[in-house]
Image 1 (cartoon, rainbow, N blue to C red):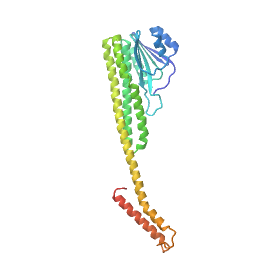
Image 2 (image 1 turned 30 degrees about the vertical axis):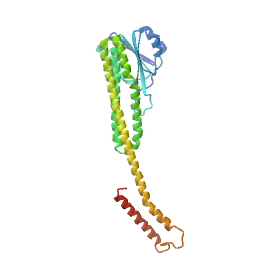
Image 3 (image 1 turned 90 degrees about the vertical axis):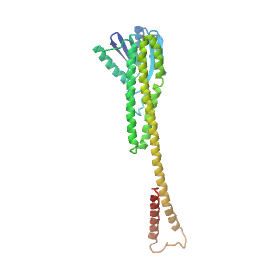
Length: 311
């Protein structure tokens, strides 16, 4: 789950590589980093506020990448649908800027610290660190897709247990979550391809392998989302069909019952007419004769409709 965090700066080190993680950075923190890593002043300004568009560009001795990831949230949650991460990637450093808590980054930071202590770090420059971090983010999104798939299976079970009416809202909320995922990830492939073209010149041609691996991770998530979207459409069609069938059965039953009571209403109206020579009326047991006749007619209609399969 995500939540708004207070300002925070965390510094990690592994061999000659430095990772600085900024949460809602202040101007003074950004100025200090700008001096320490000789950052472009235009980038420093952009780090202070969220951006609405993804970006990949080279500024001096650093690569600047902005990506928006789907927020990890429960179905139906009113939390924000996406979270921004800014990456400043240099030869010997990586700076990440974000405005919310992002669980995969927290897990990555723990693993990074452990590897640093044990001397197991394999990253030799900021590009490797960025690739490992982005791979962790896509893996988390893949796990989230698995959770959505299990949720749809639960919805399917409840649909066939007769809970179609409630599942209309459940399917709509799940559809919103899948839509938000697809919208957030839509620009990623183009951004990663642009990054590959620029990073190949910045970090060396062999680094293209790591970027293509990232593109593969993104595409796996994309395929999972398409499968979820197709499953959602099928479940929604099935749910609507079952709802329509149930409503048609109810309408048919009500219509048949109306036909059963129609002759009874006619008989009651006929003998209720205020006339002088009304047959049966006034004879001994007139009420029971009329009531008995109405019961016989109603029973005959019921048996006939039952035999026809209308009830």
